[in-house]
Image 1 (cartoon, rainbow, N blue to C red):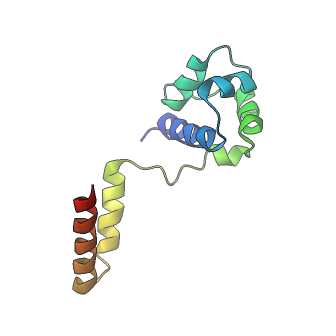
Image 2 (cartoon, one colour):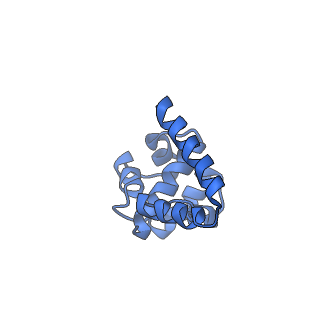
Length: 108
């Protein structure tokens, strides 16, 4: 996943956590339109350096928090991580996990 996309997903996550709409964040940062926030969140562009600090203030986070997106992964990355972790378990554990997954699927 591209850096711009990861940044965008993280920005959206932090904005929602702060309880702000795109319009509200755009106003707090002093951007002319919410289209600018939309472009950031969809990964079309990264923020200008002068807006990074404004984003931090508006979201009440440190700059490093904007780039903390190690938990944001693609479906393929998640599946790979899950498979790698499952390989460490015993057959009995895997049978339990299978039953749990089946029960989850039934409730969907």
